[in-house]
Structure formats: C-alpha cells, structure tokens
Length: 314
Image 1 (tube, rainbow, N blue to C red):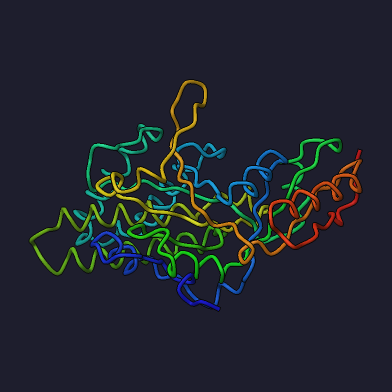
Image 2 (cartoon, rainbow, N blue to C red):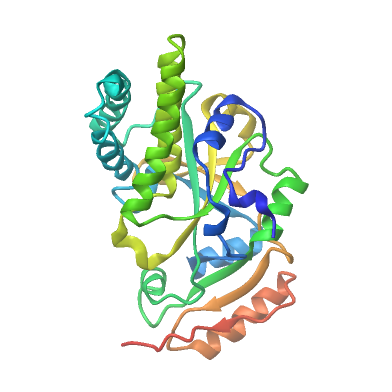
C-alpha cells in the first residue's frame, strides 16, 4: 500500500503545499481502503471508458449547497474556545474577518489573486454497491447506473510515476462527517497557526492568510453529517491561480445555465487502474450486463461487469 496517499500529497515544494502538509496531518490508521468507487450514469460510464479520463469538478459547482460554507461554521465553533484567552483575541479577530468576508459571498471565485487556491474534486465512495447512490445516479429502475472500482495503488503509481499531475497538490481521503473529528482537525490547524503567529511579530498577516487557506483546503473533505450514508472518498486537487497557466491542456469548461464552469480532466483509467464495474439494480439487468461486457471488451478491457446485489424496488 502506498503510504503517500494517506497524507496530504504535494507534488512540488512550493510554499503553499508545505503549509498544507504541515497543518493538515492525516492519520494513516484512519485510511485502510485500496479501492474507491465512482458512481455515474450510463453516459458518464461511456465517456470514462472510451476516453480513459475522469473529471475533477471545481468545488464551487458541486451539488451540495453547503459545500463551501460548512467549514465556516466549524471555524466559528473552534474559535469560540479561544475567547477566554485574551492573548489570542487579535489572531482570532483577523482569522474570523477572512472567513466572514468569504461567508458573505460564498459563491464568488477569485481567479485574480495569484496565491488563491482553486479546489477540484473527483467524488467516489468506499461502498461498491450503495442504494442511496444508485437512487441518485440511475434515477429509476428502467435506467442503469454504474459503479466503477478504481485501484488506489495503481492511481498513485500513475500520478507519480508518469507525473500526470506534476506541480499540482493532491489528496485522497475519506470525507469526515463526525462533528467532533471535524472540529479537532480545524482546531489543530488553528493551534499550529497561532503558535507561528505568536512566535514572531513579523509576517503575522501572512500566517493568518495561510491558516485561512489551509482550513479551506481541509474543508474540502469535511461534510455535513446528513450526507454520511454516501461514505464518500474524495480525490482532491489544489491549484494555485499562479499555476493555472501551466494546466491549460487539463482545464476545460462546460456550459451550465450560461455559466462556464471549470473542471480538470485526468487520464486515470486504464487496464491497471480499472478494477471492477458494478451495474445498478435495473429491470433489464441481464441485457445491461451483456452489452456492458461487450463495450468493455471492444475498448480493450479484459473483464466482466457485475450486477448489483441490492434488491430492485418499484
């Protein structure tokens, strides 16, 4: 098992990623998975297999309306514990100012600040055959959805061996839903930042800004407990604005209601990374499987799909 993906992965040494690596300690013992499952529609499955690529969606355009704001509430709860310590008042004030400013306009995306970080997410699950996710992606028993099992070790080999994400910080981690665990992680970041802030009178504004950035980055894998049934695991890319020009071949746009929404395309799918394919509960499961197997074979995959073990509901 590649231990690299158990921690905040940085594929270069730039300062931002060093800060993230320092603050966001991910505990190895919490991660024991070697397969992640990407749920998608039939059209999505077709595109992934034919092109060998997956899409990382900008976190401003995900389905969860609290995606970018949930971490604000966690920060406010954590910093309440600082109120009894007068020595931390100034640090707390400046950090909260940054979050309150963002909270006033959470949908805004800043591509002008060279240090600002854009977050792109490839959503998966630790569950290979999940009824809640089938309900979302297949919609009704007449339509088939697909769960694509990806070998984590092979993905990491691909990323670092062929440097397909060179210069991009990345992290693969199961989403945290437990409120106490979320607060403990954010508190660890705040405590580390305060130690740096308190040790020097110079560069304090920069320390606060880095703490803010690190917390927002960590917030990409902190979700409301209402979504816990999804057992989500996320592959996350962190891209500073100043590095976007070097990713012109990977960043694409789709038109969503007149808004050009960015996403990153990554060639993650091949005979080594694709471990399994599960077809959702459907009225035509035998037919769906036979054609899926033919489709896989024609596209160079020597494997057979499987059908869901979840009972079909009408």
